[in-house]
Image (cartoon, rainbow, N blue to C red; front, side, top):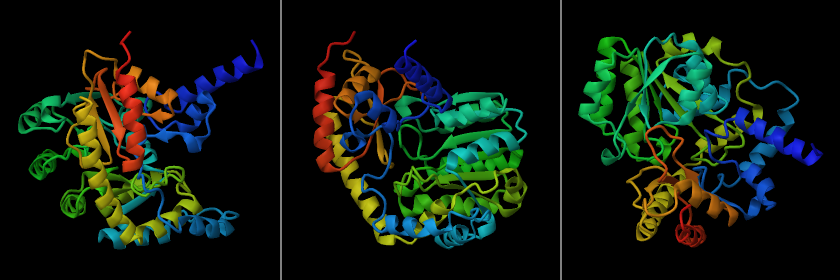
Length: 381
């Protein structure tokens, strides 16, 4: 075996270990595969803010470099204080982590869960983390005709399953649809009566409106078995820094905190988090821009016959015509043009013709639509 073949074999092994089959956003791997600079690739397989990080963040991170000779503040004190002020909760209700994924891994280990119900489709890391921790779980499949949003009938099925914990995403993954307030309240109310844990992945909630974002901070005050997971990496486009947090009743988190990793948030990420949370103008511009671009992009995708679902997040889930190429085939073709998309078949409940596309700027949409139009014209195998 040549050195080049060995290197490729090792890279494939590392990709599987790192969760390549679960996540999008492998721009570095595609850069090597296509022999194309990262700067020339339009990565719409990862749903990040197309505005990029807040202006001035690079200077903040550069200044924070003076502290990397020390271990990070294990309490992430400044970040937790800024986060508490931003959300209007006590800092004791917050547990920072190395992205929400690290917190998902921790929850999977810590909770002694006997009958886990995962509302699907869902973020692939949920099932992956539960499996690694040796947890057994069942899926409650929502329906495409309901835009993958759980209905009152689904809730009847849910409680018939007699769960000890219910896990779901809001906005939904990978559709980006919003779960109605009455459904959320019903789940949490019934869970409290049954002493059932509820874990809600709100990684993309910052793209939603004020009223939607405020639900969690009120709900945790009433229900001690409710855990909310959030991420700063998507909204502030700092995926390379990794920063997220759990939001829950203070008594609940006091039991969880000792089980987390020490120094779980590095010094640069902590500084970045404090800075990002203070960027109110950036946050307002992001929501306004994403709302405009999402509407514009959905209309353009619809003209191509891709039928995107209604979304409040910075991504759109489309159903491709079954008479044409599959989502994987489309994504493979566009990738060769330097445009990365996310086939959604890896999400339980989605199929071969579901394609997720991150929302992007009007200018980049032109490149996206050109690549998609060519890909859809290809004859299916």
